[in-house]
Amino acid sequence: MTQPAAPAMTEGDALQHLRDALGSNYEGATDDGTLRRALRVDAQGDRLRPWATAARLIKFNTEYEVGGDLAARIDRKLAELDQTQRGADATAARLTHSPAPGGVTWGDL
Image 1: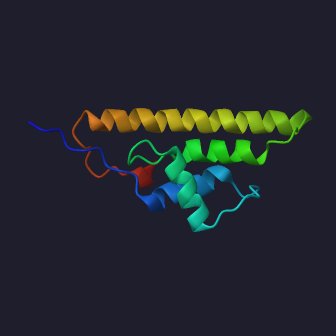
Image 2 (image 1 turned 90 degrees about the horizontal axis):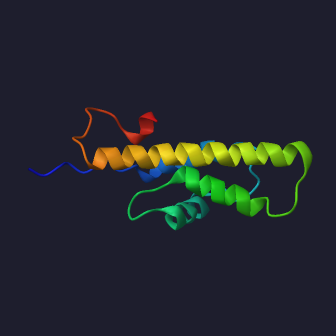
């Protein structure tokens, strides 16, 4: 008996999760083309990883030294994104090895 494939996160869902993770204060490029290319860098096979992408982009765009409260806030944001991505990776792994749940999609996360 073959296990059904895990439901793939659509590119539209991944872009929305990425934009939400970056937040309104992100000042890097956020056009669709740029974000799609960024998502492909962090993808594992066909699986998009928007929170890993957001963490990488935030790190890249804060490469200059920041201090005080801002550094602590960035560190907390990066830790939160890492935790969210690890949870999504674990969910994707579980879904790969078990029957697909009825009606649950990546858009529901």
